[in-house]
Amino acid sequence: MEAHDHLKQHYLEAIAHWKQREQTAMDKKLEEQREDEAVFHRIAMNVLDVFEKMFLVSYGAVFMQRQNPKLEPVLAEYEHPHEQLAAACQLYFDTIPEPWKAKAAEDEEAGRTEEWKKEIVKVEVARTLESIFHSMAVRFLDVEVGSREQ
Figure 1 (spheres, rainbow, N blue to C red):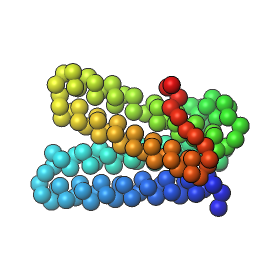
Figure 2: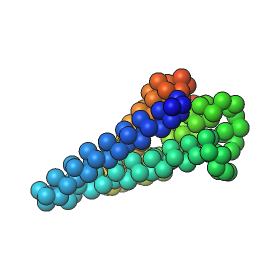
Figure 3: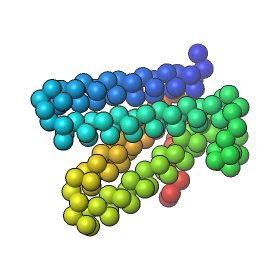
């Protein structure tokens, strides 16, 4: 198995495991009639779905020659496919959470605590997934990944 296939397997397994934990926690909260808390687990699962798709789109663009106009400029910056995959994923890690961060700041300033918490859950799940991806990229691809916003 190629290094990038190992990364794919382990990253997707990590997401699947996390989704299962969130589903279990959400089900427990719903059984306890704590719907207001269950919603945070649903949000986390939605974010996990987004970043699972992000990885598959990036992987497809690099290793399956699937056309992706958004990723083409990023992929052109790197010669090695492992670096391309890392850069493509990083583009999504940098861009997807931006609206969530902006909304969280708005909600916090306006005193909308419940809405702010929802946005923070999204941002924190994305940050944790980014960290997981970075450690796996180093382990499996021998590629250091960093934010493009530096």
